[in-house]
Image: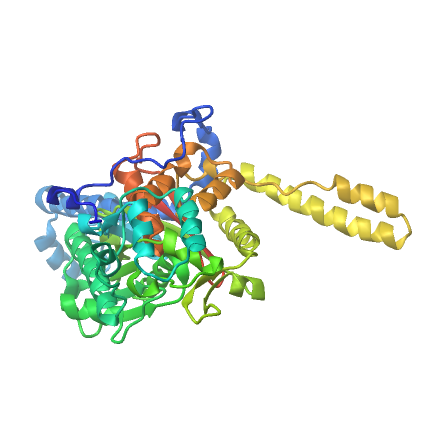
Amino acid sequence: MAPRTESSSSLNRSMSRVMSESDFSAGETVNHRDYKVRKSSLIGLINWSHVMSTFSPYFLMVASTLFMAQLAYNYAFLPNPVKSEFFKVMEDAIEEPSIFTAAVKVNAIAVLVVWYFARMDNPVYLLDFATFEPPSSWKVSHEQILQMMKNQNCFNEESLSFMGRILSRSGTGQATAWPPGIVQSLEGKPTDSSIEGSRKEAETVLFDIVAKALKKTNVKAKDIDILVVNCSLFSPTPSLCAMIVSKFGMRGDIQSFNLGGMGCSASLISIDLAKQLLQKRSRGGLALVVSTETITPNLYHGNERGFLLQNTLFRCGGAAMVLSNRYTDGIRASYKLLNTVRVQGTGQDAYNAVFEAQDKTGCRGITLSKEIVKVAGKCMERNLTTLGPHVLPLSEQVPVGLALIGRFACKNLSKLLLAGGFESGAKKLLTAAPKHYVPDFKRAVDHFCIHAGGRAVIDGIEKNLKLELFHTEPSRAALYNYGNTSSSSIWYELQYIQDQQKSNPLKKGHRVMQVAFGSGFKCTSAVWLKL
């Protein structure tokens, strides 16, 4: 059975509006306009240093133009022009030249103030990004995926049936991408999981997205100062960074970093690393962040259920982002980075939640522990607790604080009652303790890019954060069209919000929050401002 074929014109198309097999329209329809917040309550959200730095290029341009115009006017029309002032100053250095009028001084002070705020904020901008659009020869249906698994001649009927059930409930569509080394098994050829096949997949994805990102941002490869590449399960020698540097002829003094083993959360970790490196550069610079995952060498060939999930959910994909901290790039940037938060689980349960290992027969694969839901919930709670004060209005922060104080007080008072022998009173006090208040992030964030780890992941976050259907639509659409592309999935979602979403259109001034999870266990988040 041959892979699906499409016309060559479809290779450069934007993401199609194909929805998940789940019915998004079920229940009461809520429009993004129905969710209104009084403008007065949003004033507390404004970070004025962000505002000043975002618009500082415009302010500086206008103020500098006005400054030069004032000097030119004074030179041309005032009775004491510069030439006469020179001789006047030579005669009497104490007397102030009349060309520097009060208006000129005020404008000069304004320029200095704007420059000070811009330098104090040290902004990081996302100029633009590009995602990998797989060729039609890479795309296969659920039936073809199961046929590829059968052609491996290593799975028993029980495993094939299990993978079929997982596929039917996965939320992935009928045209998601697998690498040529595995797809060729549909034509009767043996699966190519060699280092050459793996490198070929990586080159195809990386070279495509880097070239598109540089072209979209009108940046030359030699202008890149920092390169960060993340790929969890494929770390060849030379590195993927060296592969990109060699292909595009980047500078010899480029700062390059290759991150591995960090799972689906690695893209925002790479963004945070690039941000910190950029902000330490006194003159500003450009950073290229590349996120991908290589599927070719990571097909599991055993029959233990704990490992089989990776064969049904992960797909080929990648994204490249160009970042800058040069304030002049604020004029042409697409987004400004407001906040990044990273939370790392430290217990043994967190460490074992997503684990690469061998099964009893020696087959290598990734297994998910039974504690992963609990671990992910704790990490996400800590992450959003850290992020909340930076983005939430006071109307949401106050109830959170009161609930925490109330629970703390009830817990300590119940201990005192127990120590005094009042067990019944202690139990009643604990029962009456206020519940944890879940803040409404919809009051501070307009769009959500939730890692497309699977339908259950999206459903769980939608329920816990009380999101509307149009908030999770990008995640479901990315999962359906591309599958779980690991760390790059949040960029497919942002692409969908930009190019396709009609239920909650993206506008200037909107905030976008990205949330991802990864092995270790980690939860990462970032908030962007649309410029």
